[in-house]
Amino acid sequence: MGPKCQCRHASTSTFSGLLRHSRIPRSLVSSGPSSKSSPAGRSPDRSKPTKQVITSTPASNYRRDYGLKRAMPHSMHPNYITVKELDTPFGFADYSGGSSKALILNRLRSLNVAVTPVARRSRERPELSALFYGSTHTFDKHKPPSQWFECHSLGIEFASWLRHQHRKEPRDLRALSDLELGAIIDEFSSSTQKQKSSAKVIDQAPVATAGLSYTLPGCAFNTPQGITNISPVEGRILDRQGRMVAASGLVSVAELGSLALNSGGPGLAGIRARKQVHLFSVQQLRVDPKTGGASMHLRPQDRNRPDSQLMARTGRVSYTEGPGKPAAQHKQDNANELYKLIKTSLFN
Picture 1 (cartoon, helix red, strand yellow):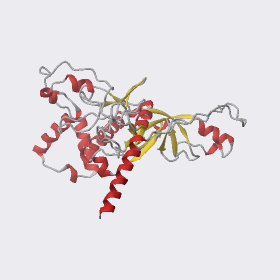
Picture 2: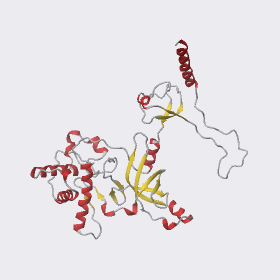
Picture 3: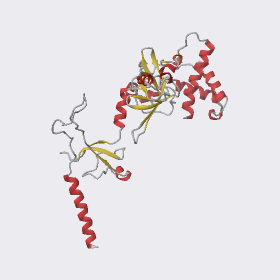
Picture 4: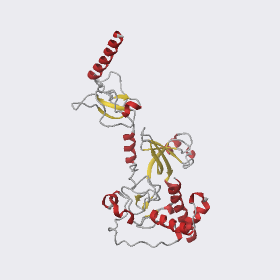
């Protein structure tokens, strides 16, 4: 038993000594011009930055222990970190998150796609649309919590209308079919609700798109044509079917057959057609909180309906009427759009 304990102690001390005196390899800098002829436009310097990647088990990650001299100052989401220096004058390792989350977020910011959610303050505000008054960061900072429910939004108006209808005819909306629910939405869109007095409400701030909660189904963006729920993104087609799209370094999925690139053929003409920049709109974006990976679904800009553009108002949400569209069809389209928003709020 004695020799085993002594050997185990020696092994532990040897490991701690090696870790304490170890160093991260520096960048590989070439000593001079290479004897071999380098291709035109390339430097003979083949220096590459080198960093250390340290992994950890989930249990050690929970304790912020990566086997270094000291534990990390805060917990890290990934199970591995990238270390530039094992030791600093402050006693901590110079590290960064080993996942690609920071890189993914920077690429999304370059696409003007916000992924920072706004914390919800109440359960009484259904996630219907981002185009109601009180959905900006400015409102959250300056609006007193006691007067939060004084804002006139589509969600509060619809909830009040549902309570009024439930008193007259109790029924469960989850048990209704899509056709029956669509009739309710059409009835709500054609009804007029009495607005409350705004005497106790602070001066209404103008509706803005900065800082909107992008966790809501209806996102809003400023465009030269007005406020819309479409965010244009530049991308290039990667395959002949137009299925895979590269946007700011992210490989995204587009609608099948959205762009007809088969006419270019498999030769040089098809390659040039796929290298052209096309405009897409972000339909869905998900970022894994653990790995930092992003999955994005796009739709070609030319397939977006211009008559479904949303207009901002400090009250009920209305939709622009398309040119040459009958009033009945315009009303039906408005009911369909409102039905999608309310159904997403009720059943998701």
